[in-house]
Length: 77
Image (tube, rainbow, N blue to C red; front, side, top):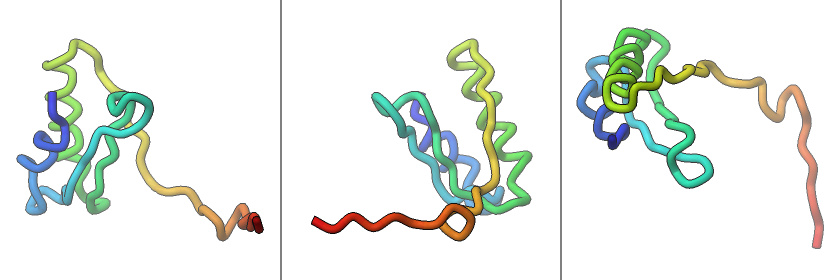
């Protein structure tokens, strides 16, 4: 299943701008960019995944506070 395509079919009008399989072997994680109001479209993508694979994925959402909270580290060579 090409989940980038499943996300594209939902489209910007549903609040999803794009998606891509990523992670080890490019299959363990799907990263999706979308608006906060895109939950119904995400639910449709999750349902499509479950129909195609028989497994219901866990959806992580939101963003971490990033460098603002944890700081940065510079490496000089």
